[in-house]
Image 1 (cartoon, rainbow, N blue to C red):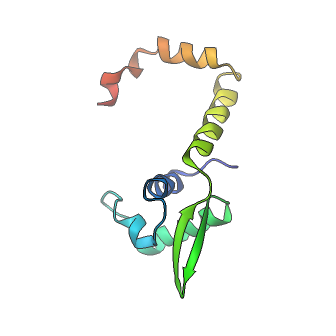
Image 2: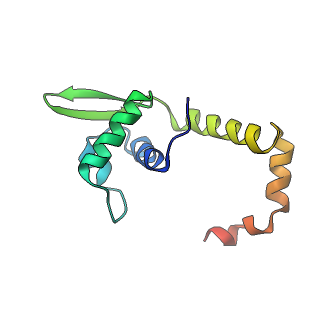
Length: 109
């Protein structure tokens, strides 16, 4: 498994939420300015080649659905972050959050 780009991750977040949908269904919840239909279609096909998404065909239309769960991807990303930034130590990660005053709940509101 490889990390997703921001655009790929945005589309995966939507697919995890809606569970399955056509490109127009993926576009609907996106924030403005929304990407072009063809852009979303291209990214979904890239996600399919990467093994994150599959589809069911209805003639020329494709209904897409995730084949990698959000939990699987979350686990992958956290393990990658732990290895890359915290020497595979959950304790170091925990200390980082505990000691970084910029990461309090008011920062995210």
